[in-house]
Image 1 (cartoon, one colour):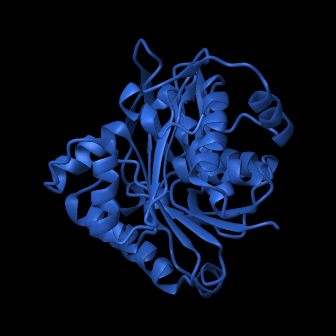
Image 2 (cartoon, rainbow, N blue to C red):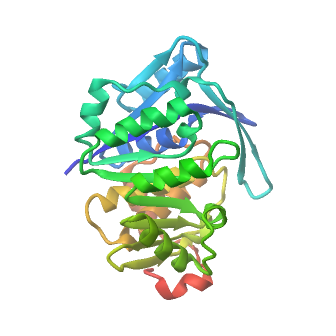
Amino acid sequence: MRRTVLSYGETLWDLLPTGAVLGGAPFNFVYRANSLGDRGLIVTRLGRDALGRQAWERIVALGVETRFVQWDDHEPTGTVNVAFDARGNPDFHIVPHVAYDNIETTADLLKFAARADCICFGTLIQRTPRGRQALAAVLDASGDGLKLLDINLRKECFNEDTVRSSLQRAHVLKLNDDEVMALDAMLGLATQSIPEFAETMMAGWSLTHCVITFGEAGAFAASADGERAYVPGYRVEVVDCCGAGDAFTAGFIHRLLRERSIGECCDLGNALGAMAAAQEGGTVPISPDDVSRFLAGEHERIVKPELAQFSQD
């Protein structure tokens, strides 16, 4: 059965050394959710400028519904300057004062949010008071659907209050290993291991799931009912990592919404993340058949030794 996924936040242009690619974690995520067969809708805002028109055309071409794409007459379409280190890891300079900071709530949006099976949100869209208030209204209006916090900590775009209030509203927390260290320090947790961190977060914030990714070394997930799983990652030739984490999240949530085990959720997430990292940009098409062929193939797996006891692979 098809699920409805509402992804709230930034759609922007990643200005890569090789050119501009449409991205933003919420958009990358919802595009991948669509590609897996779910109904994904993006809640975002574009400027009435050339980049906004090009973004609209790209969104339509990629098959993502535009029902909740808004237009801004004053601020430009969002952009990010992206540079890469020697290992292909991106460094972002996120331009402030852009259209997606001004997303507005509407009666149609609030009504739709109440029926969505999943709402995905992060912290970047909350970098302004107006952004925080608009998102809070949508989450307050939401029904019993899953609330997914893909935290995406970006420098100078979050604070402790935003993190804490986001955690209070979430069911599922997804983050990477660098963000684990940042949250552990910010919240004064002093945890000694990844499993302990996940346990502490679920106990302290009433989360149903905590999911931590390690790039090519795979992912660890824990649920409040005691399930634990570590799934090793795949070695691929990395082209760029933009959108790889968002692809993982889409795969994980796709299976979680169908009540699959967290190991199975991580397995699909890892495959999608690896395939996305082997391409340039976060929205290069990956079909369900592509994923099936990848999962059926032989690939070198990358294991994180300290988590091997939880391995599901």
